[in-house]
Amino acid sequence: RVVGVDLFEPYVELSNVFNSSLLGDNLPQFVHADCQELSIHFPPSTFHGAYMIYVGFNVQSLETLVEQLGVVCKRKARVSVFDVVAGPETEKEFTFPLPFASDESSCHMLDEESYAKAWTSKVRSGAAE
View 1 (cartoon, rainbow, N blue to C red):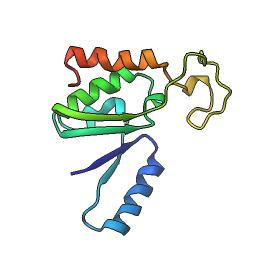
View 2: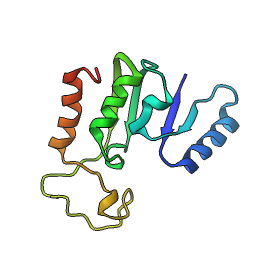
View 3: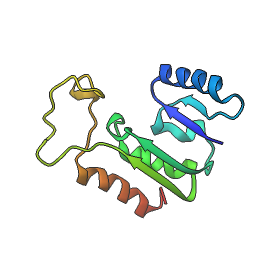
């Protein structure tokens, strides 16, 4: 079973229509959900793995997201991440709007060190292994 999660409901609707027209009954399911509340939508230990593409800078608390992945993924699940982080010279001085944030209040991009710390602190504590 393949499940996709997105914060933006029109993307979810389009994905479900697109997949059903191409794949028929063999399709992934897409759901509209806040990835910081995955345990509300899925029982514990549901998934054998997860991947994220361009997610980290769209969530207020990466630590909460990592914790939620630890709940809904089985122990020793593989998690792959492709994300963008701020470089050391950026110092969070962005010119808005950005493709992922209209203003500073909606920009949650972390620098590399903070991003890595959010993952390693939860993995060490056993929240996501």
